[in-house]
Image (cartoon, chains in turn cyan, yellow, red):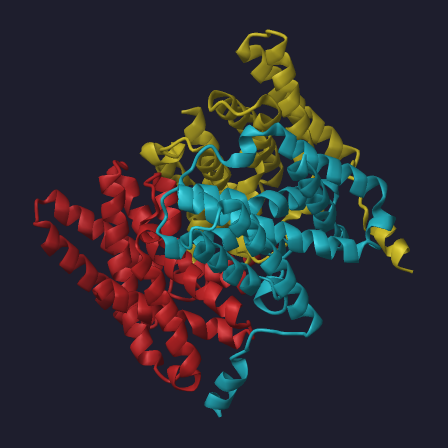
Length: 203
Length: 203
Length: 203
């Protein structure tokens, strides 16, 4: 039920950039599917854990299609709910990061690399969406959410290592990522940018 | 034999956009391979049905290479056969849609999701091609062929459900997709576009 | 040890285009990982040989992270070592081509198709990098290294067929690719370009 609702909202918010780019209804639907499922699909394929998780669960496709339908019926109103989407989106990537890390641990990936799969689950959908829209992925320049996911993933690993019960580790790590991202945006934290140095070197 | 000829023509027509973009011979060959095999490869990888079908069959690579050779020798003349290519292309995506749907059924995918794999087989090669050429995939804005594939795929599922013999269902669904696409283009059908509504909402 | 050093240098050189495009530190790291590991990952996934090779070996991630760290600390100086990078890069793709071809042979791919996997290992990382930077892949227009890889791959196959010991075939093929690429650049060889013919046909 929670998954259904999360995917419904994710798909709803995923339609906006596609609508802005004047994609037709099929293009919008394709973008919604890829944004919602792309990260998890690439994770499962790289881990070799078949079948890819969403394929076996038709309710996942139905959740995305419901999101699309609502987006189609209430296009105008949706674009006003940016703030709500921000919170859902942040919660969504936090959950995805921990689920992805857990799946990698189960698949026997060495600990150090497991967090990469968490981050891939969380961000790759958005990266593929930006590429399909023919843009440089936003996350490479501005959006500050990969770092909270990375740090949160390693925090989760550390808590598990310390023998915390899994539900505690999961809960703490998710809250950590949400708060970290919120603070990062509030205080306009951003990652250092090396291009100015390179420019200086060229003179 | 039929597959060989189909891939030969597909590869032939796939070279044109690459040539126009001033790609060198390697770039053209890469585009021809990706356009021809990309959809089926992603489908097989997502389904986890290894080995990916074309890999085991060297005649598939040879068909594409033959198409490239003819395209290289007769570049001028080829660009005149647009109309012929349209029919081959339409027939090709129809066949690919049904083959992809059948493969997903065999792989045990829940019925509702099988058609997605048919559509992926048919259109993903072209989407990857457009991305490699650094363009927004044509299919997201103009080309009307994903919808006939989708509807045709579900028609096929329905016919199978009604206990039609497989060859009848296949044949009917393929003809349906071809006719649907032809009519859609003739009467300039297109998918609804929601961007105007969003614009209105912003004022 | 050799692999560690090779990946270290590869990741070092991979950061430069990302820095130039004003990516933030995360974007740069993502590009370094994708450029270094993308080709091999796609090869392993298409062959269905799980787990994907780098996943099991945490030292590979560490090599790339070390390259990133050095790149971060000495950004100015690195951009001066273009010539050194050229040789490392050329050696790197030669080795990757032969390793990829060998892995495809082991996976039971028909001989004619094995070289494709060698070439994919060598060049796909760079193609994905260019797409993430929102550019037409350089290799489709200018860079002349796919052809040496292809020819070198088939040379390797031929030597193996003639019962050469594997280490001899590997060594000869790698040297061949390096020399071929060097000569190609020195004498400004490039692949034929068909776009002029198409233009002529349109008049």
